[in-house]
Image 1 (cartoon, one colour):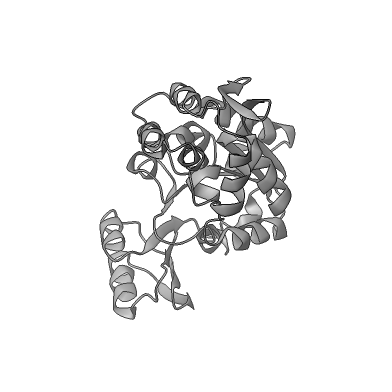
Image 2: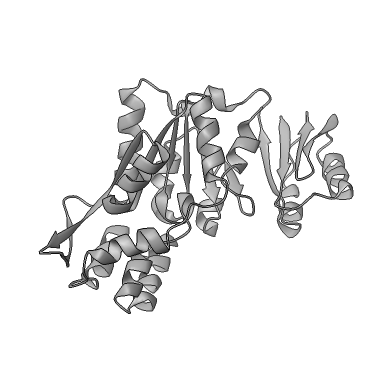
Length: 278
């Protein structure tokens, strides 16, 4: 077992040496000033609190485990691949962001049913001009740090990508085309005469829907669960993450961090590459 340490800042050698001592590491390998690999460690529970205090992301990774072992990455969109919750920003165009954001937060913490929360939020958008969606995409949506590096490395190792979201097709399809993702699935906002009706068309992609799409693509390509990585940030991602061999909580809610294989609390999405790069 190896212990991977990574941070946004240069990790002081004293902190690395402390963690190596606690984990009884056979040796320390410095990959970069912000990235270390401690070889042949004994996992220790008290490492988590120390790393969190010093803003270091860590992961106990089996010896030899690498990206090439996987065939599929399934990821959430809002606040995972991208920096915003799209529906909150759409609501801002309607002047009701606080009301919608409050429902979003409650749903992501797992306090209310996602499908019901989505219906309530979308209903508040009734009458909004569809041009607001493009404004959100052009003016507010940004990739989270490290996204392009992560995707480049995944493609290099032959890992397919599925973007599955409780958000909206308007955004997932644009990101799929822009980033060269293999698959994307999300909810469809109903639009009539250029205006949002306040309804969602078709079956809502909720937590179970995300898990179902993961398994659909996995089975289509003959992959085992152990060959799948799932990444998300909210309670709506937990069922999907439970279907994967490796789950990544990205800047996630506590309920998600507690159930994930690994948590990236500080670094960008390229932290996945650092975890499984070697």
